[in-house]
Image 1 (tube, one colour):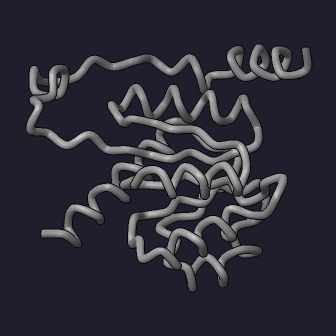
Image 2 (image 1 turned 90 degrees about the vertical axis):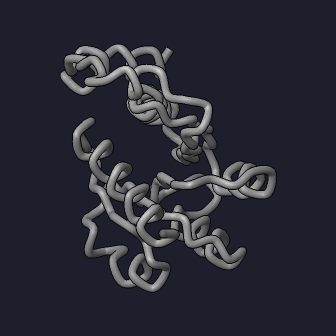
Image 3 (image 1 turned 45 degrees about the vertical axis):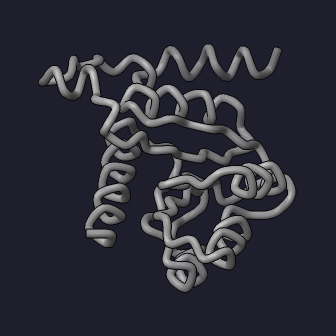
Length: 161
């Protein structure tokens, strides 16, 4: 009941009702089998936030997997590699920075975007040590998330070129 109220409230806000703009080319609308699919892992214990992020990133043609805890996220990463991570700072069994630290300890240099309901400066030092790509404060907009993920993927492509 509570979740449906939250989702209803979020759906009435402009966040989920931004106008969808069609793709500008046939290549964008129908990617070839040669184009790489970008896999994103979104980790947030708030189901409504996960739903919003899944929708936003799926609209951008990312393949999105969701986790709701640090343990679930670590399990997902053990099963599959991701090109980008979007992690909430506060999780029921740790923090997004704990997950980021684990990801880095496994040798991944994939970009990590940290979402925080707290002031970014509160997590900045540890985030910098873990080479976090971006820290985004909640509430966020579609444009903020979309831009951060696109820049993150771009940085990954530049690094591998």
